[in-house]
Length: 97
Image 1 (cartoon, rainbow, N blue to C red):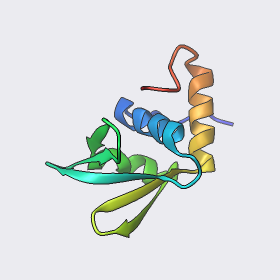
Image 2: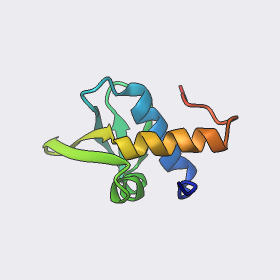
Image 3: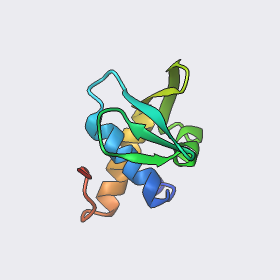
């Protein structure tokens, strides 16, 4: 298998955080203004644009359970990407808490 496509650090942090927080139901992101969304109940916010590449590459799935709310889940491809990323960069942390 080829090396994972390089993602920006913000996208990697997003994948790691979703993997850390998701207990099988997905995690909710809510708008905070100025083009940002925040993880519900946590002090973690990213630009909406950060979701574009991981979503396009099917590393995460995004649903919209209600207006303005995003339900995000890490896909199997996303888990595989993180695993390969961590294998390539053993010093990188899985949890960014």
